[in-house]
Image 1: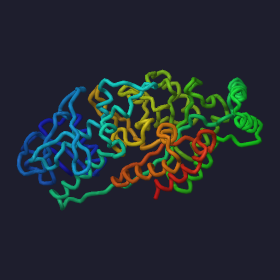
Image 2 (image 1 turned 90 degrees about the vertical axis):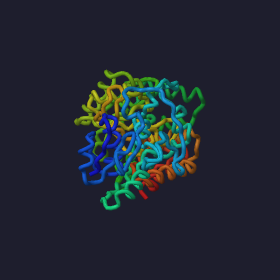
Image 3 (image 1 turned 120 degrees about the vertical axis):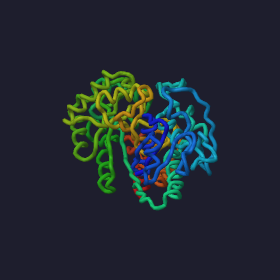
Length: 434
């Protein structure tokens, strides 16, 4: 165990030290603000305050972890070796930057509480983040800093037995449209038919006809392929089902359709299943609750995990609503427009609520990339996408983190805008698990 002395043990101090030491470096940690207790302790120890007490491992503290609320602060990004960092310490400090305050700033999403301009879907944009501006969005810098801190600790305490965590991979699949044509209402099917006909999309007209009359399989029905890959490679896979009522942004098959309900039940037998709350649940607790109950009735078990449709969430409100509904895990932490690490980490972390200054029970699983980001936003080809996927996986592997990807059942269809993308999922799994 490592004992940490600080002049005041705040919830922020406790939260970020536990994240870095316990969850990232697997070092148990305890705290004291009593000097005599610290001096009497014989094991490895460090102080986190303004001046060292003796010749212990010392990190000069920034004020951030001893403040409350959110304040606009000036952040100066510099290089620690070749990695961007901020909150410079001083000559007596064992590391040149206060990695605890800097990590807290990024992981708590402090910057998302500050005034900012939202995009058309009401989301915080990547372009406004420090990580984007200073080009470290595609590096899990919080984990990298933790490992640099570990190097300094090993020099100071060479006899301590250090454990190493293992790299993990999680494949997540969002079901925005379980089927392209099947099981849609008569109004939608007829409307879609005439719309395609009017726009002279004759291939779509034929496919719609062929699928409706069981001549062809629905192109978006790629579930068996995903399950086959899951079984062959033995990977953790989570399906997030959209079961909200029909809107412009929520166009899935109706949750009242028996075939759709059977599909969800079948997936529960082979993989984990979570809720994909619809577009308007971002600030609507009642709607979120209704959809959660609806999915629980279908699968006959409590819903533990969730990911917002369109990645629409605002901090802290959406997360507070999920916590109120006893959702335990959220998978929305990422950007739609850019690949990379929104919270600058590839380690799942507990959401810290800056409104109430507490660590909440909601565990956030940050994903590194999404298929629609690669195709629609970044306009990459499948081959170019594979290169980006490999780079991101290598970043995660270097710090033994958790690599999480987000795909849709549609992107394995080789249909419409996903023409030529069919094999990317399989190739990505091979990279992620190699």
